[in-house]
Image (cartoon, rainbow, N blue to C red):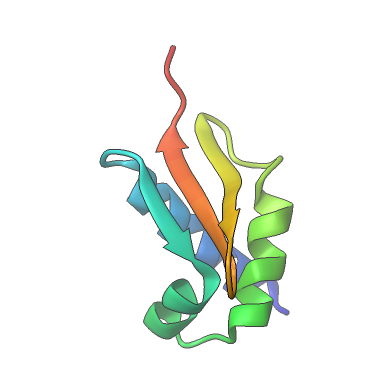
Length: 74
């Protein structure tokens, strides 16, 4: 896991939060950025506490975790 990959995941999540609330899966992000789902999931767990103004929350779990991404309301 590199810092570059972490930054790419962070940027991806921030861009998704610009619109209305969205649900994402690590494998979908991984497909878009060319990384493994496991690496993306690890970054998402860490980013939960690091993103300012964005809520990144584990939402559901079936075969994989679904993440809710949305801008925090003021």
